[in-house]
Image 1 (cartoon, helix red, strand yellow):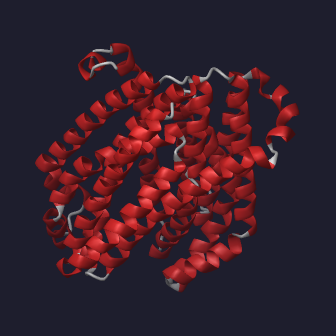
Image 2 (cartoon, one colour; image 1 turned 90 degrees about the vertical axis):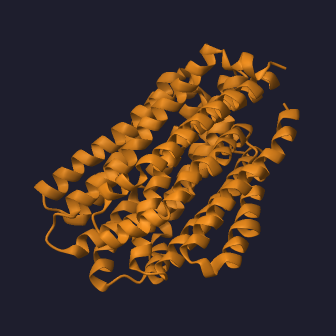
Length: 443
């Protein structure tokens, strides 16, 4: 087995990680930019309820699409393994199966949209004016469901084939089109929240069409393989894909439950606490954007090694991506330790919120260190297509660690929430680390 020191001297592999990770980090950074533009554009309309309507409507749709992230993860792992095996036909079949599942789920969301809205609005209970604007936004935005889910599959497929620059270009182009149409529809045409929703729908469908065209250009034989498509839609081929996606969906639901619980409990601790936590969650998003970029590289490289049946390559990929994950995590921790209070001051000038956020900055310093392993290992296990292990460790971390730790410490208020979340991240890392040797032995 190659020593870690020898692995660190592999300049070619460092470049490979950079070629996958950096484009995805840059692409991810355009996502919060879109949210800022939406807020700025709608925030300049006459009434507050317009902004509230977009916030509520967007929250519902974003949660749905976020939970559908299993489409990207499963596609990345399977496409990466086919890429490692040098099997172009299998690469095409992975894509076609993923697209079939995405379109079926997208159509199901359209059919069930009225019921989804009633359930969501019943839980959130906004004011009547906000609810009215939110429904206008939701009714248009949900129309992009088939395209948005197709884009998740296409993103996963390109990452699996280590075409992260293509994935980056698609994501950036989607968000740029969205921003331009946002400005045009809302500020010029005066379409209000409906204009903001329509801009996103057009951008999603435009990106889906472009992604499909690029896939056909990348593999010209793709269209010919459509003749065998019915064979690959047989239940014996689709059931394993559906089972894998269900496992990843359960994993994502557990994660979202913990985050939603933090928000709900913080809301009971006062306006300053919920606002401070919202500011700190922006830091969590920034950390996730950075560490996810390296996790994408780990996904692609581990999947390639598994497809090629090269255990040594998988170990090397884990070592190098682990090295860069540790470096980035320590960098994040140092930045927030040194400049956290200054960054909080840039985000809000409300003194009670600033003081409250600064009281909890230590948790943000610790967060990248506690979460580095689980971010990286999530990517590694996506590469292995080990969805059951991801599901089981997430459930154990959520219901065996997060909620019990919070319950034991709940008298500590917001400190209990952040301590529980740090323990949750650590538990995920420990659980996946325990499962890792067995995955490696299966290569």
